[in-house]
Length: 208
Image (cartoon, rainbow, N blue to C red; front, side):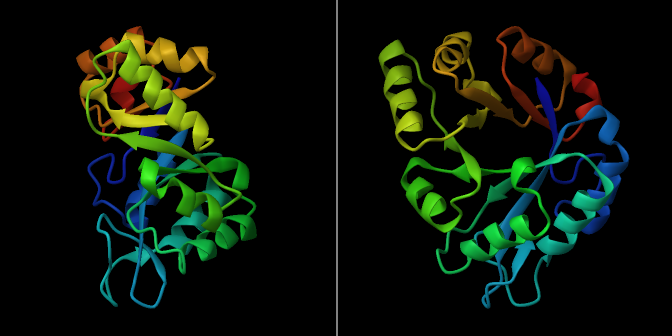
């Protein structure tokens, strides 16, 4: 199981280079760092939890990427907030530029955005997001078929809709179950028991 430091973990401001540096400083307890990604109107990629950034909003995604590449072994969960097919290919090229293809993946990708992501960033794997509970085995099986259809790594969901049945069904197909955002040890321990593959937290040290 991996642990992901949510953007703004360790009581830092979300989506800032300072936060990235602080998370890297704690990297012995985590394997993955999350960055939110969107674009300014001119296509400049920035870290921001919003679909669009104003011309002066957001800190440079490239600066964060470079810092992580040079100062850690962490993988990066890029939580996509904008799916503009004119802008996304530049992200693919940046990740190749810093030799990070094996350490980067996307989340925030709904089923209907998967094809855009695949065509714009063909070198980067991704998880399918899902927001509603899957109560029956049929619902789980139908969802898994969609994940396989889009050639995704698995699913990234709110921890409240994770279940042992979902976890087992995904694993039977070689798929992964990632959950967000868990900030207390009791919940983390419950999720470990159902064998989730990743837990995202603002307090990663509680997951150990």
